[in-house]
Image: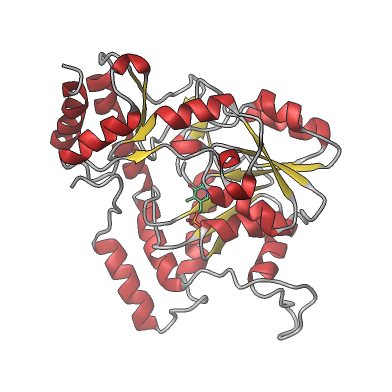
Length: 363
Ligand SMILES: *Cc1c(COP(=O)(O)O)cnc(C)c1O
């Protein structure tokens, strides 16, 4: 079976982990943690990085640091991984789910504008499947209504909006380093910010709310959201390869697109003129003219040893987030989308095999 995603780990990761273990610093102190934080912040063009135990708690830490709370509303795309909305719910606030832009799948700025109420405190743009959100109009709305922006960049390490890296636009941006993400630490996450006071507050909340000057004195209720030095050791090695991984992802995507371009009924993943898509998972849409539905195509590819995933399901259809009105674009994308194998280890031969298997269903 060709997997949808698998990590690419080598000698560098191994050597760093060995070094962390030999040093004895295996918990949440040790040299790799600040190194990983500083390097990802520098890579994205921000000042501060705060590493966390996973991407979901990075989102929660960001919201908690911005004091989002019960009675507040946060605008979230319905087409995202559940963690984006769950982090809002952990604070007691309400995620307000909005539609995607049809031409690039991420949150639609016009829909954000319509969703803003006096209770709205923040917007959470999600750079979905490696494609950046349209940040200029989102930042305009945030400025006009005095809202925070929390970027969910869990699927878009290295992606760019108008030549600037995602993760650098928000009050706080959050990354995930789960095993299937573009770079991984096994489990892990990070918050980035340019605001020193937010960075200080995030560090305190990450470490049980403990006063950094006075041990075992807690001024606030915090969390244990720390990353271990062993995870950061892997992260440092992965980050050194990020540009190579992004290049490889774009190469795989380019080959898929050139082979699938002419297949009737297959829509290719978008890349807007202002975007650098890093194609976290290369995802196509199966249109009616393809002649079979998405689920049938997935079953047939499985028989050929090709693992695929349906596109994320819109949150507003699920019990915890249920909304009675339909959210049309997200529902349409989700019913037609398939993610294809997209690992950086995927060979050109495998990519051709997969593209030919899709094309072959039509003839
Ligand atoms: C993976 C992901 C997360 C959560 O990250 P974890 O590290 O798995 O907790 C959050 N948001 C999006 C959009 C993701 O894809």
